[in-house]
Image (tube, rainbow, N blue to C red; front, side, top):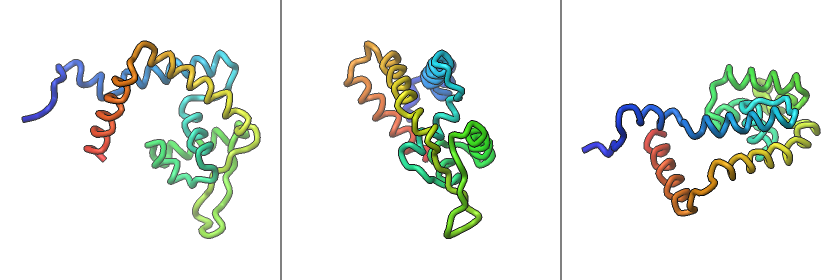
Length: 146
């Protein structure tokens, strides 16, 4: 028997990530208020490069769950903003490695602070044990569909 306990209207909202969209909108508003010329999508690419600089575009696709054309467009725009640079791989010239510039490295602390502030607002009043259950359930959902 299926374990789906959602009403029809609730299911779509849950699957599309209403909470995730609300968090992204709030963070984008904070970026705009801070005068940062940066979209959430661009920030997500920078985030993964801050974790490991020099990823290939394919690795960024995998990390951000985006397709190749989307990553190409995001990297193009980040290059125009002088936040990243493409460098051909020494072992395979067909592969571009994406590296952060000094300007992007300077944005890390500020943007991560705004992200943490946003998450703290979003999770205000939510008991830690409920957050743990939510993380656990969403990991199972992800694993089931991976």
